[in-house]
Image (tube, rainbow, N blue to C red; front, side, top):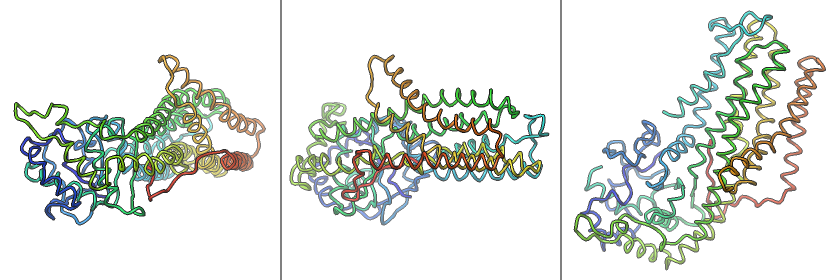
Length: 490
């Protein structure tokens, strides 16, 4: 995965560079070509994200040229505003590029931990009078290694890179916009979007807009699943204790972290509403640039206005600034906003962030395997595979629906807190129905295998009903106009 690196925003340009962005810059931009072949450079995504995204922090001023190498094509061009929150932006990129690999490392660690415990290499913990030792390794080790895997310029060259910016975008397969509320307010960000749209035919515009709120949402959801699963591996396992301690602890831990997750989900959908409003009213007249912010003066010297060059270039590409603005307000808005609302928190995303639920079950399954009770081990695995693949996607989908439905911010702040609580309470009936059905099966004292099969069938019935409701519910279909694609979190 390649991405351009080392180009900072317009405020980083030395005065000599800014003053020369005139006829030479307009000619270079309009040509959509790089000024020299050696300017076309890129770096692997992991290089840009080293040291928790050091290269993307606005206060970093080191030389990043050595991290890049010459290339013939850039896989993904990252467009972002240096005036937005860097932590959310970095976390979103870490989840986007490292998320699936982190979950894979977590699963590998969990399976190794379960095998080591089953063969008596790892010690156990006394949680039950019936069992000599129980496993509590899989869930914490899996989450630790998953999170650990998740986190893992020269003046003349800079001038040539700026002049070649349009050419860099033309030689990029895809463009990733890390959107926050400041992105559409920056002159150079809109220029990057215009250059990418101009350099691509209608069938090859692989544009992804990823709100920077999606990274915190994914992390909050993952931590919620971990907190909800933790009581199953950290408290005693006697039947009475399991009934009167584990499930209340599950409810408390899940409610606390779930409240934070709902807060993040509602913030995400609120940011999509802001994105839609900004795209509908996008205008070069309302953008800001460093040269205008400082009054076109640098230590007493007059500097050229970047806006004149950029607007002239975009006008030459699209015929007028209004034509570009109509493009953003039409095809880009239509293709992106609906997908960002309905196609980001998908079933595959839910299965990934719900991995701690399965990891907790492997702890319990390994415990029963270690003492040779295979029937209970199989029953636990059946139950938790059902929860992982059926219950969690169903419940998270419902929570996401409620968060999208009630995403509008409430004022004053206490009403906002109450609205988060309302969304959480509205999600409880579905969870109560499922937990109640499971408790009924538990109290009937059916054989473990029969109980697991009945529970899986009940979840499958609810999932089928959910699909039918979605099919009948009036919902705007995801758009794929112009090959524009939605962002994905994990």
